[in-house]
Image (cartoon, rainbow, N blue to C red):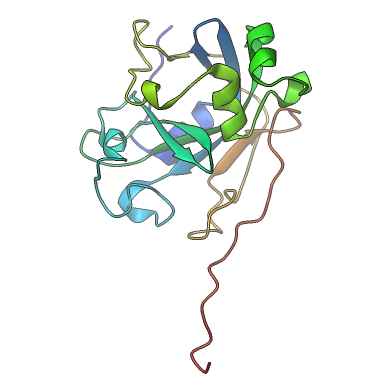
Length: 196
């Protein structure tokens, strides 16, 4: 069974729920994602165009875009056509293989929280900036995205921890799954009072 990505991040995002993200001996069933739509989405890294940091977002599709934020790594599946920036942030998952390795990387954490949150997920899998640009659809890559059985109950709502386009319901998760991260309302930008 092959895995196909839709050119739209908004369409691909819920389709990724239940897929398996594997790096080495650790595999995670994806339970939470967020869509980022490139130049039409001010919260996307691709909104202002291609840079050295975000170049992977502009294709080809099927690549892993990894970036560092607040001392953690975040992993994104790129699905948009080559030359068009956009992708899906992998926010959380359930470790289904390699539990002992994930526990070593995140000692003292309950199993359902090992890959809960984007930085926790990459830590549990051992994903770093060295994996940026990996072809997720090739078994030769360091990280592989594998097919799944569709999840039956999917919920959606606003994305987490952004300050732009905060009301778009582009976060998708498996309803009731304990590995899904806690929702924190987005911070709207604070504008200085022009009277001051």
